[in-house]
Figure 1 (cartoon, rainbow, N blue to C red):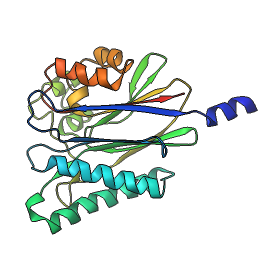
Figure 2 (cartoon, rainbow, N blue to C red; figure 1 turned 45 degrees about the vertical axis):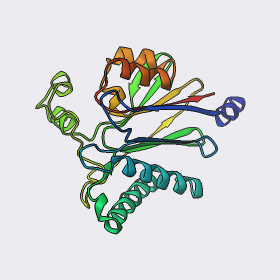
Figure 3 (cartoon, one colour; figure 1 turned 90 degrees about the vertical axis):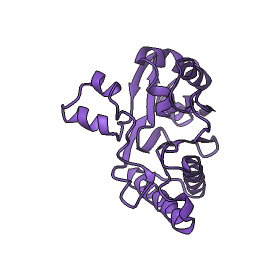
Length: 243
């Protein structure tokens, strides 16, 4: 029993990322960050249509990455507080630079602490777990259509093709009240687990089966598959293996 516990504590984090401008986009407004020393991964998707989405995602990634490097959050409340601080950081930037007013970004963050992965998110960027060939979604979208699905107003299939499918209901930046929800959860990790973080430019443009097959290969394969499917957005993915 002791040897098993020691082995689990020794699980190694190995990560790789891919981020590309979508075929229908002039600019990649996504930002990804990996820090294998801190065992941290972040994906941010700058909100299109609000201007400066690329700046919002870059500022959020840098703020969160720097903060976790200085003092690693240890639980859900510390992560929620960090997300609130990052939101305020973007609001402060907009106040100093009025030309960036309204800029916003989604975020999904994964952080290894001991034998657990802590996750936090806002918006519709997602985290998945691939374990023994089985894919499961770890986050829930903060989006208009997901709220309607939860309320029983829309089916999953109707939500996928809804004209407001990309409207998010929580974000970093945007406005003082834009951060309406912060998701957090933790996961006990096992050897050979793969964690996947990605933007909706990836997960919204392939079937669950196709996603599972691509995710079993690499982050680059996920992004390329989305591009091959003529994704309507920029596409970014991170794959993290527990070795």
